[in-house]
Length: 313
Image 1 (cartoon, helix red, strand yellow):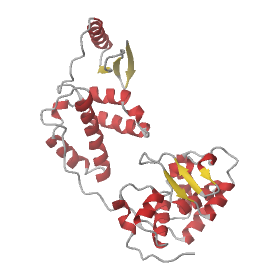
Image 2 (image 1 turned 30 degrees about the vertical axis):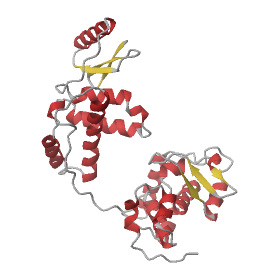
Image 3 (image 1 turned 90 degrees about the horizontal axis):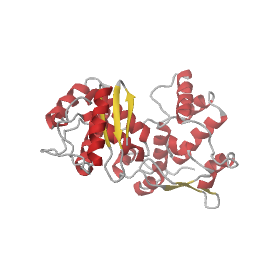
Image 4 (image 1 turned 120 degrees about the vertical axis):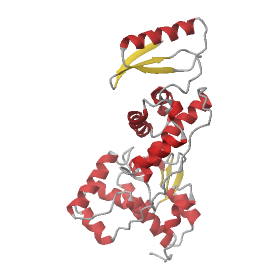
């Protein structure tokens, strides 16, 4: 039932038994790890139920269990696990009872001197998610509930526009496939991950629509395709996966082109912003644009609506 592995200088014990909750704990010394494993296994053999989690345990105990049993279910599992590992490095040895409102307020203020408000929000929220899950599913009792804290005001969303002159300069330094991806991003407003996941079977050529089965929000949507988008996708229709390119490779190629042309303040994701802005300029309503872009919260589109819609050819 028990397996012991060494991670980050710690001996991690994992105990799994059918019909019993998964248990995990880390130790500095191997002898202590074996002793705990033997104690838990013996208790399970005698029919004893695992004791409820104690608020005197370290945050590491919860985090390890969360990484093993919950995070693999997420679409962005690698990113979520990486973020939680970073928080283990900062808060892993802190006892759960010490993770109070005032603790996070102090943590927030200290971290704001080093990182952005958005980063601080992500860091605190992942710890709160672990604590919330532990109280709802694992029997953890927090006398004052899951801690909360007032988050710093986030900066306004980016709305960088890219000019046709900039686009032509950038494209000079990109491969033909990467140029097509840039144009397709502008034609559809799709995210980088969505573009690179396009399969021929996702395209309805007759109705000129692309079906995105799963997006960042977790739900699918249908994107209407312009004549230009159809022309681009037709070139790759013979392949099951239209664009055989890693996400990081696409971003790196785009950044290199920007650096070569000394173009600042632009990212590949800004092409999505530009595409959405153009949709509003064509006179589409917020619900119509949200249906194409996949925004589940209309407020995220508010920064584009100050533009005067014009009829574009």
